[in-house]
Length: 149
Image (cartoon, rainbow, N blue to C red):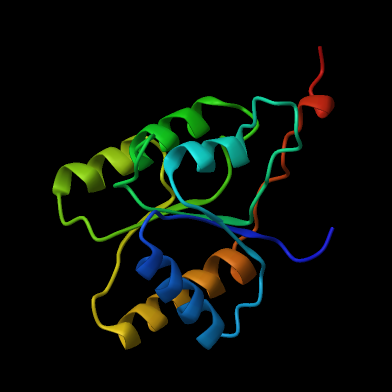
């Protein structure tokens, strides 16, 4: 099965590069799958074409995404029993209290504001990686094949 994957749903190429660099600086070597918008993220987690869904150990989700917003993606992922328990951390520059409140109401596991200073971002990434990839004990995943009729 290999190392657990990280799904990064982020449309800003600079933020993608920054996140990948911060993960690397913290020796987090898990494969990172990047989805450049909310529709691609949804297709990874809830594919409609019959392909095998991605079941990441951690999803880092931006709120402000094209096509499907991060909050709408969160709503759909939490509505599906196959993805309801996946760890999703909202990682955003948003300072809007309503985004924070709605993220938690929709089932985000955590809400982290992206620090502007790179060293602070590296530290935030280290803490996220240690907790979600090493310390956290996730529930077993549910596949459609495993559900009883």
